[in-house]
Image (tube, rainbow, N blue to C red; front, side, top):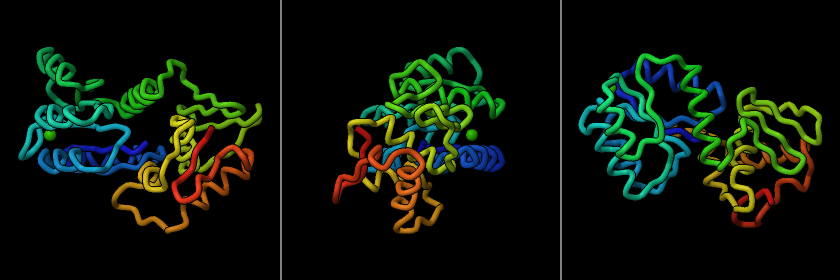
Length: 217
Ligand code: CA
């Protein structure tokens, strides 16, 4: 997933960024509410927004209300505000879930997986598409009943394609799903990942749409 993390606490932010990156997510990290508002009103798309409420320059609740006018990306609030009224206000303003600090990273990851499932319209923990089964919790993949070893980037790329099956994803969109702002991307990195996935699964599973991007039918 491509995740926008909005958190002004350096220590917590760095811990979250590192933990999520280890799981293969592309994480963009912003430290104040005004930057977040601007980023969210631009052209870039995130699969999930992790939003702190107490932020410099603009409160997280204001960021959430602004973004809900034009974006339906899932939002998970992470905050120390633990009053019922705050939770109700956050959920009513359009948040999808609410986690009170301090929290365990394992719980955050489980909630991310749950939000990912809902986004894909699934209730089950695994993703199935044709001969392919993806297990987001363990990062395992199976093809035709046999286990396939995937790198975390390959897993992230395949997840994005399968969750959008039937739609063509542009190179730009796929690169966004794989890499955060801070990472340099080789111009042919995407092709290399696609090549490896075709070899590990089946050559025809991922279709090239010339001049546009890739799709899974
Ligand atoms: Ca804060």
